Amino acid sequence: MPNKAAAVVGSAMRRRSLLRGSGVAMALPWLSAMQPAGQANADQVAEKQANPRRFVAMTLGLGLLSGNLNPEQEGRGYESSRYLKSLEDIRDDYTIISGSSHPEVTNGHRAEASILTATPIGNSGSAKNTVSLDQLLAKQLGRETRFPALVLSLSGSQSPSYTDTGSMISAESSPAKLFTSLFVDQSPTEQAQQARRISEGRSIMDVVGQDAKRLQQQLGAGDRNRLDEFFTSVRELERFMASNQQWAKLPKPKVDMKMPVQPGGNDLIGRQAMMMQVMKLALQTDSTRFITLHVPGGNPRVPIEGVQEGYHTLSHHGRNEDKMEQLSLIEEQIVGTYGDFLRDLGGVDEPNGSLLDHTSVLLTSNLGNASSHDNRNMPVLIGGGGFRHGQHLAFSKTKNYPLANLYVSILQQTGLSLDRFSSGTTTMNGLEPTTA
Image (cartoon, helix red, strand yellow):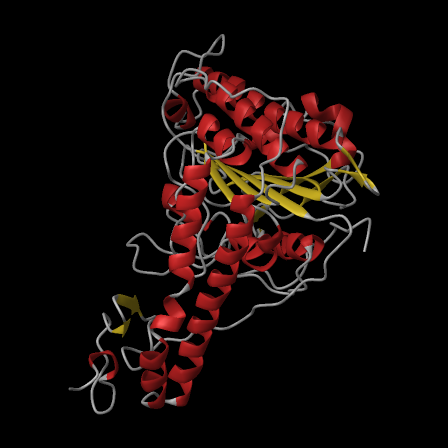
């Protein structure tokens, strides 16, 4: 009987082709025998550092009013803008960047998918996304912690985090569930169930091994390489699962914080502050080193004195002064809570510095102007991470600087010796590390 998994020669392989073993079927990746495809293998291993490097991204679905965020002066002697006044005491811990964006990324709100990938995906959705900055770091450097990465949101499951196959990773929006995952031990029965699931998953390559060998003999050289890369990624996943099995047997870290009780649904700032408290503990206990927190563009009427309309409604202000002032009250507190997070990390001592010194903390959005759905001139703050801060890097408002160059700087400072990321082809001009 012919092998259904490998009908290659003389005809295109079906996309749904499977490798089969005793009671197990494993779907194959795209191969040129199915349709033309290619995937670069850019895996690199970073040297282990005495002080682990970390990355946090806080992404905003509705941007920030640039006139309230960006100082008028550039360089180190700038006068703090309205939003930065509450960060004045820590101005040497962050850099404000204006005049940057992702080249060719358009389509307003849809560009949320491109915040951390810098990849244009168009309005139709036909273009394929690529791996996000946080997930690239997690894939390469995330195996030493219980959680390779955390993907979080203040509401809903949307996130800016994408796998290397261009699939969005759903976000966790409950601080209580996050706290439980990080710090509450499972019962012995639950631990045994998890260990059994992991053990069953780890056996898949052994089960389909013979079918895989037969398939490789019938493929061209390019497809054999791609299939080998796919099998390598499966084995990497198996190694992670084996590592995770060891984590399942280890007690979780104990912290002083009590189980969080989430504020009311409209209290955007309260949810942000609570989630960032748990994030700090996750970094401090080395439960993870890579976190994204998305602030979606919903329409709650945020309970702040002076705010009378919904958040999303206010973002489409049309230059109406009253709406812009209400929006400013919300955004001022969003930026202020980001500043509180920087202070919290700066207060945690580590060898050769603080937790903030070893953590790059990005605040940005896909929208430079939410009212007109403009994706240029994105708001950008970068704190900590061992960079030389205390400055306003002002690039051209009409000919924006590629923001992905900042991502190259972050990758290198976090431990990956890559010189490109999407539209980023070099490190960011003017942002220098204080340490090697």
